[in-house]
Length: 282
Image 1 (cartoon, rainbow, N blue to C red):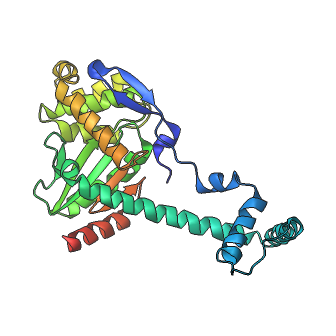
Image 2 (tube, rainbow, N blue to C red):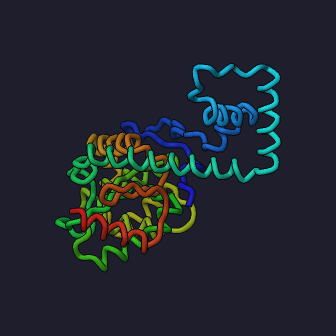
């Protein structure tokens, strides 16, 4: 499922709740990049790579007429067999995904302590659990709310599971406000009920909705509004942005289980499988 930031701009939180907006880094799709190359040049390059990469010392260079003839042959072949280009695109896309997954594994290993043991990050489930799920999320993200029941079910079913919540507001100023109120609620011991209530909230979310939710779970709203701009709140949100950037997380939700980064919403069966794999690998 498409991450929600495809429709949003990343909000950067500054002291006092001020924001600057920077669009998340976007990598052009493989198809878009390939389609920028003229078809004949691409096809000729592929054939040249296969046929002429290691010519014999006695080989003569192709004449202009011969090159034109080869290009015509390639052009006609591709028109007759468009499935060839589909296969090329699919293979290259698969390689890009595999390369990105390997990059994520290396970053997870290098930043594991920050991901799993930042003392300022809220923790759910069993704090001493043997497997940790790290969730980057936004309270206004519909896909985060889609995956939330699966995460809640896993925590209920698996007493050895731990979850680290990374407030990652990317959907505008109201998202940042919600993240700040959540972290202020944590100072009152109310993070979990506020988080659960926000994830269950449907429809548009603005300041008034956020404060009503906070009040409904027993948060001292006046105190939370004073604490939401504390330096430690600013620092944590900035650290979360930095981690997301290092991992090339471009939307929410994003889950880390073991050494695997899962972008976007996923189903509970895959989550169970990833937790089991992480437990086996230790």
